[in-house]
Image (cartoon, rainbow, N blue to C red; front, side):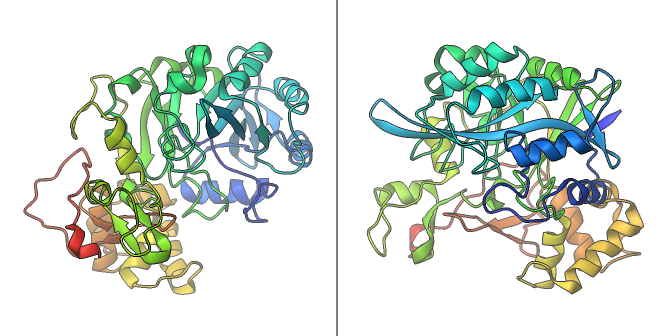
Length: 426
């Protein structure tokens, strides 16, 4: 059975999230997207946990639950803030467990370290990453712990301002219990493959959705092929990097992420790493410190050239949400456009769900439903033939569908594009 899973999402009880992040809206939109398994998110929050217990029904001894036609796994993202080696560390982690009983034990233990009712994604001050893992392992040895959006400039394992240079430095002797990392929107597998020290870890992808709309939910996800849905099968496939069961991830092109390039939003400055380094990572307009992008951080730590692919790497597919493809083609720069929604909904109604449109619909079939420009953009996105103005310092990147050089050979790997010269930016 094919499982399309987005494990890292939030509820309406997390900060900066939509009030529509409830079980009904999440499950409704998951079906429209084409997902069939969601992480609950936020299980440490007492209000959300009460709702989960009332509505989710366990599926035999699978470690999964069901509600409104969707499978659910009990998950939460937590934040650890502490000092190590004279530097403030701010790391996010996604925790996965197979039962309410185990979740309750985790809640009981973590409630002694911070206020669980203040935020669906709780913050624990003076709790290190290794201490967190030690606590979780003492409760349940098959808890799956994933460093969230591992490369994002802020709040991440490899973050430029408050992270570490290696997984071992972060988790110390608890590294043996870390089996995977989350790539995040601004990195993709080829970027991670450039670090040989990551070869033993599985690469996972999730949306970190703060709203239930299908251009947020499932914009990145994990695909499994299992005999039957099971927490234990999924965790085992992740631990073993089993390509027969963990068949691929779906990634947003990293250039589209908000922290891919180095830059300074207030001054509209976006720079390729080589140009940022020439400026000593200072804004050429105001002189302030630039926000280091994920691409530059990868360059700092990489020990392999672009294009390297480990033999046991799990495949990936690169996609953009359908709404955002349509909005850029139509040149409508706003969310919730009625015109874009109507075009999106028409395609989804015809092909069953969004993933069928993005992954499977043939061009001649698309042309029966939508314009040639939109059909062409969908195919180009699927084949990795889209150029981008890269995102930086909290600004999303922008796809440009009509400038791709068709003479460039189609590539299976989406390697980074050459940036313009420094003069073009300043």
